[in-house]
Image (cartoon, rainbow, N blue to C red; front, side, top):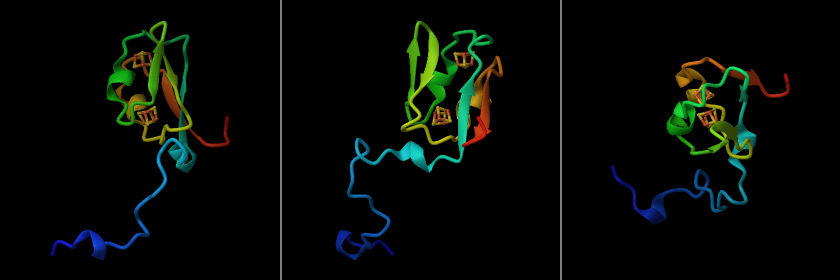
Length: 90
Ligand code: SF4
Ligand code: SF4
């Protein structure tokens, strides 16, 4: 049954914009790029569902304030140069 806006509890809804609510801090795993192996193919940049990868001179730079550690970039990287590490391990 579809609920009206008024019937949906406030609890699961964030009233804080992402500019303040830095969602990367929820992360458990963190991507680490081995730039010596990067082929500058841009695939990680294209696939990141959060759009948190910028390309600087063709190399990926990940904004860890917003990266959620989903691992899509690591999975898709053809050079296998993005590894996922547990937060606090590196
Ligand atoms: S781990 Fe996920 S959110 Fe973080 S940079 Fe990779 S694809 Fe983007
Ligand atoms: S997908 Fe891998 S090889 Fe391609 S730009 Fe990203 S890190 Fe570099």
